[in-house]
Image (cartoon, rainbow, N blue to C red; front, side):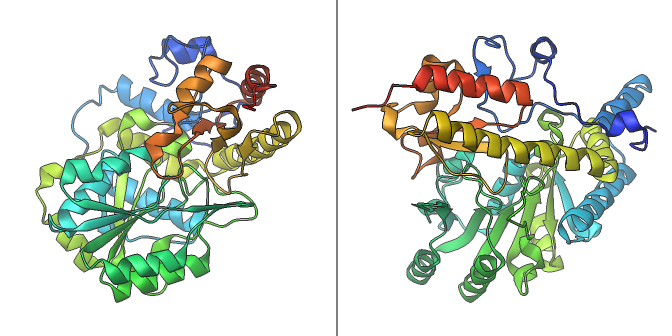
Length: 399
């Protein structure tokens, strides 16, 4: 088995080979590249962790394409628990972890397990855009708890959440992006404590999507929701290594419980709704969570520099483009309102600058005139992205 104590395996290479990305058939790097630089997917360009790739080569050479064994899942669950303990101070019980194909599937299966058809689900827009499909696909009503924008970034209005839960008895789930996608906001301990208190008072389950937790930067701290006093009885954590290690195509995530009764209730829904991670996904996630600490430390340091570099250059060269420094994620939530980008800001930015970004209105309230842009790439590529922004937008402010 490959081990990360080999120096070469532990090095992060700040480089993107565009030809290789395109040839690999990656959804992000399709044939529009490099005419349009792809910055629309929340996937970084510097993976995978080399030890993962080495292990998958071994499995392929062995012809290991059958169903994953029970022991393979057990090892992955133990690896996740160890990773979470080392990185975030929470050691979830491997026996209370269920594998899924994706965090989205984890969320949808929780809605099936823990709500009635008449239930309402609270969202926090602007929110990871697939979550806005919950109402249409499950029949549940969605209720917005919108983030508020201030001079120093985006904020949660705790008074409004108090009002929502007090006045809408049908609310059964609060879905958190923790850390928040697309704004990069990290909830504080005091805010999390208040959310748990309110959820407990109103018998609301919190689904905590912590997929971006590994990318939390100095000045903020990710606190797993399940570690808060009283949270175990009202929290389900859904997460994955796909953002950390850039392995989205391997279809592997975990749904983790801190309360056995919630775990048992979840397991009572039809097993086919829970999905199953692939054999290669098990292998890759296990290696990443067992061996990837040093590599991820380098990656987080790089993206920390990138967020500051992006903020500095935009402030100097495009002061009309409003951008709040994210506390987490490798995502920039760009306010293009000074330029009049229309109802498809991401597409407008592609035509204006040759950068493919995600349309902000897809994210719901707070998304008008915004585009989500990924800065999880090489330093050279990031500067090319910024150069294109400057060339395409300089002098383009709407009067």
